Amino acid sequence: MAFSITQFQGAMKFGGARPSLFEVRLTNPVAGFGDSQVPFMCRAAEIPSAEVNPLPITYFGRPVKFAGNRTFPDWTITLYNDEDFIIRSGLEKWSDSINTFEGNVREVGNGNPLAYKSDAQVIHYGKTGSVLREYRMIGIFPISISPIALAWDSEQVEEYSVTFSIDYWEVDGGASSALGAAAAQVF
Image 1 (spheres, rainbow, N blue to C red):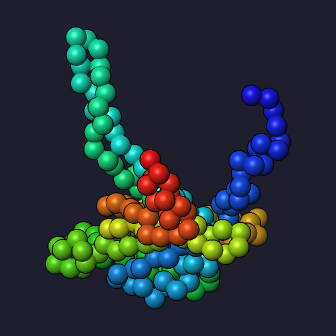
Image 2: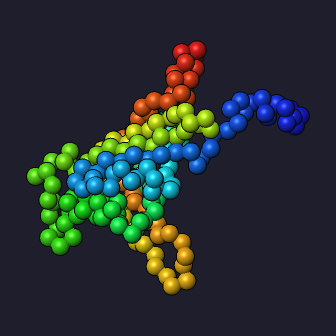
Image 3: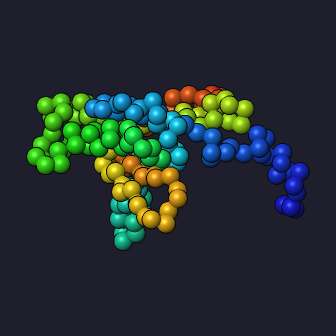
């Protein structure tokens, strides 16, 4: 195949999805007073990965791989920190309720995991503002809240990352999920 800008442009019908057009919505089940600020303060996130682990079985000395179980790796977001610490404070309270900093006990839900798990969404927008895809992470809870670096020579807004464990994720909607469903019907 010869190099062709015209063919490349024809293949990129919508001009490519932009990674900067997204929003994260998060529901903190323990201390949600900062939830409304998350869409504005979340500066980085990721669309979750889809992984199926191989299950190797050896036959006459040769490993043959079969599809194993689906796994859902942890999900990480990066947030700006404002001077009220409203989101971080809520996340710290959420983490503390799962396993208290001092007492090493669970304070929420009498041991019921549904009391400390929640859901979150990553909404990916198109250049026209339409929703391309909406991913919903189900059964999340914070497993790591990163430190905030302080330095006398820094003039940047503080930021930190939060890593969540997730039970699973699903696509809730958006124009591309409808296109994907239509394409799947063709095959």
